[in-house]
Image (cartoon, rainbow over all chains, first blue to last red; front, side, top):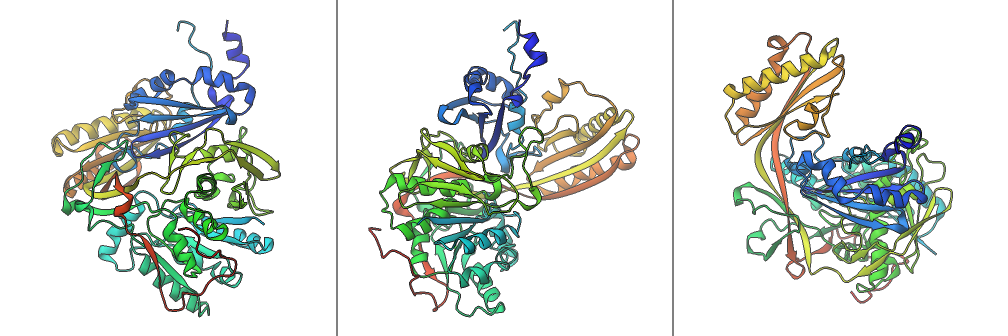
Length: 115
Length: 469
C-alpha cells in the first residue's frame, strides 16, 4: 500500500524537488532537481515524459523530451506548443509560462493505484 | 589571477541600484574585471524600434541613465569596463545619451564604442534564411516588419574593447557574449578554443539574468529560503585563464549563492543540455558539476565546447493587430458565482457585439488562471469555494483596434449592467507584436565596432594584443 506514505511522507513533487521554467518561442523548458541526491532515482521514475505530457495536455502540449543530468541530480524537460502562442502570441496572463514550474511541482508522488 | 565579471542588470525593468554593490566589491577586490548590463528581451528591441518611430530618443533602453548614473564615475576611474546591450534599436543614440551623462558628471574623456551589424531589417529579403527549429510561421509582409536582428557573438564586442572603449554599447548580441567578450580580450583565448569559450559563455549564461543565480527568482518560503530579498547581491563570476569558474556575490549583500541557485540558472532556457547553441560555441553541459566551496561560493566544472554553429539566430518582430485586457473584481459571499455570471454575460454580449474573428480568453483570477488553457478546461474541472476574492479577466486580440476597444468596453459596462458588487475595473489595449526566429548564414552578417568619438582609440592596460581573431 502506498497510501500510508502518501499521508505521512512527501506527497507531491514540490516536497522533494525544485524547478525553474524558461521559454523560447512556444517551447517551454522546466529544469527540475531533487533537493536530496538520494531522491534522484525516484525523480527519474516519477517525472517521465508521458506523465508530464499528460499534465500539460490541457494546454495543447504536443511533445515532451526529457534530458537526464545525473551529476546535477536533475533533469531538463522540454515541452513543445504548451505556451498557447508564447510570450508574444498568447492571451494568457503569463505568456512566458514562468509559473508552470509550479504546475509541474504539484505532480503527485504516488502513482494512482489503478495505473 | 582571475578575471571578475559583475552583473549590473538582468533584464529591462530590473533593479537600477543593483550595480552599486557589485562595483564596490569589484573595486575592493582590485582584480581585472568588467561590469555587464543585460537589458534586452526577445520583444524589447522591437518595442524600442517602434518607439523610435515616434520619439527619436526612444530607440534605446529607457533606463540607461538610471542604470549608469550611480556607477559610471567609479567604473571609469577604476578601469572597470562596462558592456551592455542597452543600445537596443539605436546604439548610436544610446552613446549620445551616455556621453551627455558623462560630461554632466565631469568625466571629459570617457571612451564609448558602439557595436553594429545586428540590424538586418533592410536586407532580410535578400538573405538565405532557414527556420529556427521550433519555428512554423512565414516571414511577415514588408509593411508589418518592425525589426529583424541577429544575435551577434562576442567578436564585435572584443573589437570594441580593443578600440579602448570604457563603455561598449550594443544592440542585439547573445546575452552571454557580453560576458565572454571581456574574457577573450583579457586572456586572449582563441576563437577555436572551444572548452574555454564554452566556460566563458556559461559564465555569462549564469550571470546574464542578474540575481537569478544569486537568490532571485528562487525563494519558496519554508522550502528554499533566501535572506535579504530587498537587497539581493547581483552575481560576480570569477573566471580563470583555463576556464575554471566560481559564482559568488558581494560580501554583505542579500540573497544566496548555493548549489541549488546555480543549478536552476545553469539550465535556464536551455533545451538539449549537450547541445546549447550560442553564436561562438556549442556548449555541452551533460558532464557539468556544481560544488559549494565556501559561503556564497559555487564552483562550476565539466563544461565542454564544440565548434560554433554555421548559422546565427535572428529574431524578426512584426505588427499583428491589437490586443486588450480588462478586469473586474468580485469578493465575499458567493463571489465565484458572481464572477462566473459576469463571464457568461460578457461572453454572450461579445457574441453579438463583436465580430466572430475576435479572439478572446476569460480567466477568473483566484480560481484557475495562469495554469489554464484558452478554453478554460482546467477551471471547469476544479471545485472551489464560492466565497472568496476573485477577479474576472478578459483578454482579446483583433486586427482592428476598434473591436479590441469595443470588447474591453463591454467588460467595463459590467460595472452597472453586470452582477452585484463588481468593482476595480482596469482596462488597457495596445498594438500587438509577434516574433519569429530564423537562422542566417554567419558569412552574411557584417558586424563590428566603431568609436563614438575621437577620444576612443587608446589601449587599456592589461589587454592582450590582437590574437588569432
